[in-house]
Image (cartoon, rainbow, N blue to C red; front, side):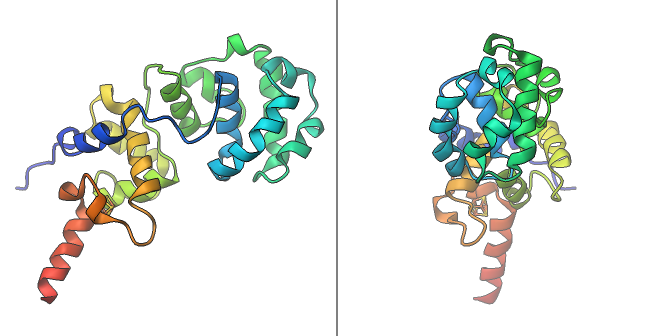
Length: 217
Ligand code: SF4
């Protein structure tokens, strides 16, 4: 019977490369982080970074969101996917939280807010240095985790559960973001740069294509 891979050891080089690297969203406070994470669902981080300065000039805090109407926000976020719904969620969050100091920093509190799911909450907890309660599974992780062989399928919730079962809790906060960075920089959808990959030696996809190459020599 094949022995189960020790994923903590296998992915250690990935943690070494990316541990502590700041998220690509260019935020400067927890309020900005929460707002940008919510806006970035189904939109690129680059777009959110581009629109953020003007948005935060107009709405610099939860207090400002609380006083606003969704239609006040919309001209600033019109290019963002689902902007109409997101403007409603942000105003509701402002009304619920009222002040930046009351932003909840745990999974239960964050996912109780409109528009924030587990992925968003995991990102916010990681970036604010809070205890991880799960693993970040964004679209890059959904692509790369099955290639590595640490998870199967395309369901982010199942992939998160599988990774949580294979990685020790102390590394939950970093491992998802590390796999995400690998996907952003090296393991691209087409033409992954295997030769630059720090976990090439433990990757199922790479093992498969290497076998294929050997067989055809
Ligand atoms: S070896 Fe290749 S396919 Fe595997 S994770 Fe690295 S870049 Fe992606």
